[in-house]
Length: 296
Image 1 (spheres, rainbow, N blue to C red):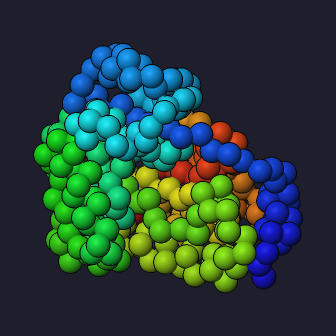
Image 2: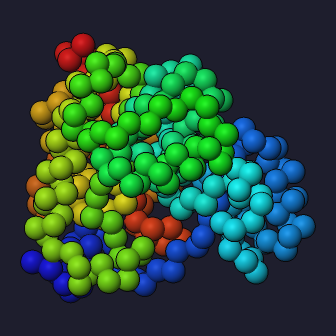
């Protein structure tokens, strides 16, 4: 099962009418390297027009720029990161990150890793993993560019993280997913429902493994840039039933996640998750999880 008509009909059944979306480029100011106001002033002086993103603390839309934002000295100095707007949400959902032990389980290319380090004020430690060795180069470059000092990088599959013998206070799971049509114009011709189901299975493996290394009072933030419920609400429903996880309320951009998927009733607490349908941003799904009391 595949093709644009198939997926679009699914989205309509889930309550969203398909529309072509041209995502806006966004940046996030790295406030551990410079004051936000001075960075904005510096970029304005170069002729870069910015607009504050209302639902993000340090995020800005790029309204106009005569040159690539990844090719100027301000970028190379780590004053900002080029980061899709919705992708700036997950790291911001954790509580009390300073001095914590954090796992970034699928870290490359490193935008969220840098954001975590900033929120932690370069304290504590971040263990950043990626399964693909060549992607660690991009990750390491990001960390160096942004003066990040609290990250240890491992070439490791997140499904094997318990081998490290470390328990974590916070875990970011920006899991490998099917993506969506906004960032891949050939998406509808490339993807099948079988692909989605395969990715959903991988995500469950990662969830099951990382729960093993989560401290009893710890938090997991789970995120995908997939619109497919198999990778989003259905996976969280599975995690509630099989991993003894609770979904916590979050306050962020997006709509309440769905608790009825194609006639299947899910756990009511899944409405605490957020589903972001493509508009100014790409599609996205995010939630915060904690171990249930009987799992302690």
